[in-house]
Structures are given as structure tokens and as C-alpha cells.
Length: 368
Image 1 (cartoon, rainbow, N blue to C red):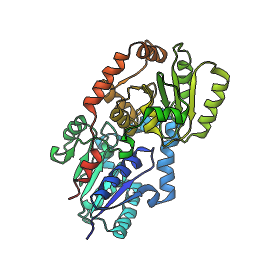
Image 2 (cartoon, rainbow, N blue to C red):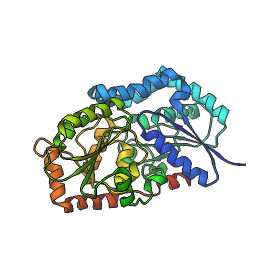
Image 3 (cartoon, helix red, strand yellow):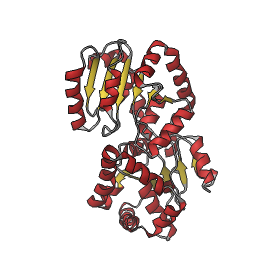
Image 4 (cartoon, helix red, strand yellow):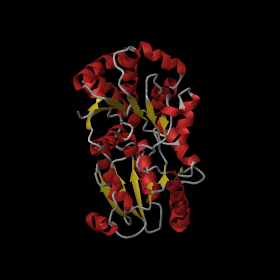
């Protein structure tokens, strides 16, 4: 009888779903049946709107408030308080119906809410199914830690140490890296990509703000246009159509000399990263992992306070990114990397040492 894996994801940003698809791809190669369910959408449209859309809105318009809530919730007191959280109780009740309906052999969570909910079901004796938690950032939050998790898959050995500090047994923590879909790692012919997008063969910088275009891209773009060197810029606005229009209008008025490719959402990120020399972006967990695997040096002028600040700390501590400052502004950073490519190479070497290939395959191999 075919064994079944149920992956519980969520649409708070794009990373949880992308990680879920990567694991699904490898699990199916092993002959397992694998189904991804957006757990919050399944629970109810209202819950999904409150959590997923709330995250998107706060990230775009009130990032400091989001960061404050993230820190307040990252305490043992708040973790204990989750037992009485009515929203979590509702999510738990609905996910029990899903588990009964799907009858899986394994449950995987790429978001903390479904992991907490299934852990509660196990704690109360409703199920004994193996529960795997995939943490899609380079940090640990108290919401990630649940009593009945059988295995934690984390981005790096540092995360393993953080979990051990919180009392989690090292035997159930696997620093395999954040899973990425195989197609993203395909070798790309650079000349074909340049031809497809009408790009020139010269120093190319990518600018993006995440799956919904967060980050003050206009301010960053203004700094980049100050650079006198002959650079080419690829701007990816994500699904934020209003940002795309705003950037388009800005370029019509302010750009006279730079070669610029402006895109909204694209499924060609692998190809575009392959022809870029560096990327200006925010440090989302999946974006960060993709850059490390592609050995694409990162410049990070903006981030959403909370887990992205922690991701940035990890990147800076490991020589994987540069953060512009008042002393070393963005235009100076880019010009220096343009003039001294050995500095880019130094970051690439660090990425080569850090990257964890085959994460999704290793995760799938745990389903025994």
C-alpha cells in the first residue's frame, strides 16, 4: 500500500509553499503519495485572511509594528499561553478533520501554526502520526517549538544549537538546509537568458523585494541610479502591481542612461539570478537559500523586522551578505564590488562553504 505524506503549508509570504513543493517533488520520486494543503485556507477563509493577509499588510505598511509583535510573542510565557489561544484551538479542531479525511502516514509542516496544532492533537492522544517541522528561516522563534514534533529540519547548524538551548534533543534536529525545488538549481545557459530578456553581457545587479514586493525599492533605485559605472539593473517587483507602476513611472522620469529590465512576478528567477553579479534584496528565508545555492552575493538594505532581521544577522555573521549603512551607502557598496570583483568572490566562497545541497531529498528519505 502506498504511504501518504500530508504537507501543511501557509501563504504568509511565498517561502512556506515553495518549501512544501520541493519536498513533495522528492517524496513522489520515492513512490510516496504526497498532498500539499494550505492549512490556513482549509481552516477557514477568515483565518487565512487574518493571518496571511495580515502578515502581508503589516509587512508592507507597518513593519515596525510587526517586528514588535514578533519579539513580544517570542517568549516562553507566550508559548505557554498558546494552550489557551482560541484561534489555535479552532485551527487544531479543523486540522483534525483534515487528518481524518486524508488518512496520511506522515505529516509535515512548513509553517508553525499547523505544526503547533498537530502537536496538540498528538499531545491529547488523537493521533500518533510522525510530525516533521521544516523551519524556513535562519532563526528559531518560540512558535517553532512544539512538544510532539518528531523531527525538526533547520537551515544551519546554528539553528540546531538554538533548539538544543531551548531543550530540544539534538537527535531530532536535522540541519539539512531549507528545501528548494530542483528546477531552480538547473544549470542555465547565460547567453540564451540574455537573448530572451534583451540583456547585455555586462555587470548586472538584480533588485527585488520578496514575493509581494516589500521594501522601499524606489529609495534603493534612486541610490543605484547615482552610480556612474556601466551597470545593468533587473528589477523584480513580485506580485505588487502598484509597486510595478510606481517604479515604471519613476524610471520614465529619472532614468536616462542605465539599462534596466523591469518585471512583476516571474517564474524565471533561476535564469535571471544566473546572469546577475549580485542581488539587492530583503532576507526572506527561501530567497536567502536560493541566493546561497546560486552563489549570488547579497546586498541587504531593507528587511521586515522580526525573522528577517534574524536572517540578516545570520548572513552578516557568516560573510554571506553586505548591509549598506550611513557610512557605507548602497551606491558606494555597489561601486566597490564593481571595481573590485575579488570582494564578490570572497562572498561566493563563503556561500560555497555554507550551502546545503539536496535538502529536499534528505527530508524525503526520513519518511521510512
